[in-house]
Figure 1: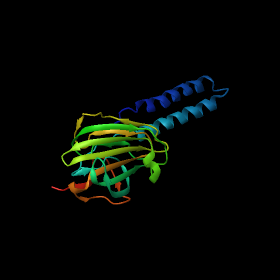
Figure 2: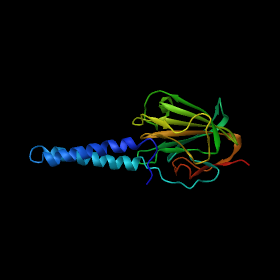
Figure 3: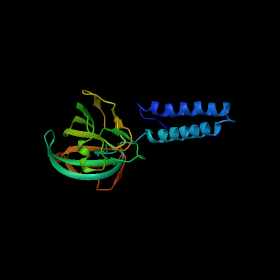
Figure 4: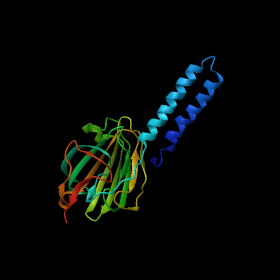
Length: 215
């Protein structure tokens, strides 16, 4: 199983502490060994949790515009964005059990990556638009597309893998949000024939087609 880029420290740290406390247990078994054993077990459990949480599975890339994130469709809306113009907005909420690596929805050139610091409200709330976030603007064959990675209550760090000027293929990895979070995608309305998802749908980044391009 592949592990997401930039997360190995999260896995190795509790594992190392688990080894250390296990050594303490072996050496001090007659005194407070039970405490050291308990801490060691907890550290190994935490290591296992991080291995599962930071997994980065191989994906078969879907057709059309693919999902940028794993999770559940939180809302679908239409709006007027100052960069995109008339656009469809599709929001995906990522729970703790989802893969948290985000992917490119289309082939494109990274026009801008802007990190905005803010609050840490639960990512499923409407007011979470004021949370810490990374705004990625992508120049694609259908025009500008915008991705917004939004932190949540536990998700205190967004780690981009890309920078301005990078050219990427659909399905390539663009970053990870640590712990529960949300990703919004803004797509030019005139360039899509229809949206393939509805509220509550479970989707997988890179695999699930969320919209068909208007040829």
